[in-house]
Image (cartoon, rainbow, N blue to C red; front, side, top):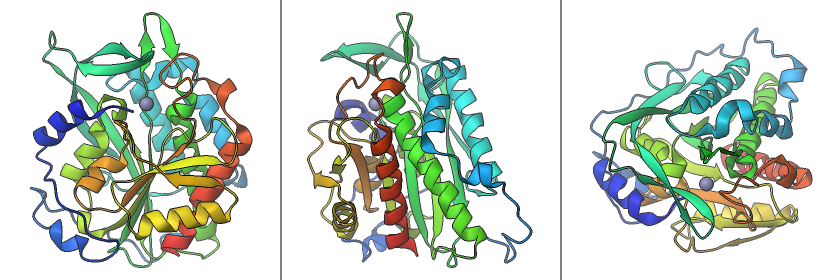
Length: 346
Ligand SMILES: [Zn+2]
């Protein structure tokens, strides 16, 4: 998670227009018209999309903790944006979504949405490693979002479930595995995507498309989600809600917080659903922190990020490893995301 200054520069750089809030799911749509240079197209879904699709139960039942184990493996080198570790992570995530027969939702029928990022250097603030643009290197590096969808009955509407997959990489010879930040969020989104795919195979289809988004370069100032907002692969007006998960699986099982720019129907729905499942949740100010809900909130798309209340514990240190994951909490977080999607999209 990053503080505001870099974000502001990037938001300006990307030409993101700051728009005032309107309530969900009311008149926000009209405010977004004309925001992007390139009009996005509506998804065309074949009628027999799930016909004759076979997905092994081993794939459908795969649990979130298995993905945390992979994503925090030293072989992925801390998943720093612009590095080989990030690219390997992207290929891994793309394969998970392809194996579930999800629709490509990136650019030109691909799962990827490429963008470029500045070269960054590390700085330590309050014991946490953060990124700042490196003035000695003006060359750009590649990064990408991965986007896929479970087709809905009304493909003119979209609900996004998302998490950033990048982390800090290796710094001064130490691996930053980012098990909680944010292998945990990615793993929950994957587990819920598997459950929703099983539902689709059983004939239970969502009304909007469920778009699964894994954002790149969040740690560098929400660069992936900001890029998506500036160059969306579907019109922003069709996005009914963005539910983003970031650092959800450390600390006591029931304790969560919610970040959102607004007090809207999406926020009240999340608070209600989580409380109903035995969670303690409150919406709190980010106090200088934010996640990928921010670029969406700024253009009036209803967006929230759910986190562990204790997300800052060991955050952005080499100790954010799999030993800090509370597996019961991880299961509860997946159950929460599944219940939220069912509430909003079915
Ligand atoms: Zn972070």
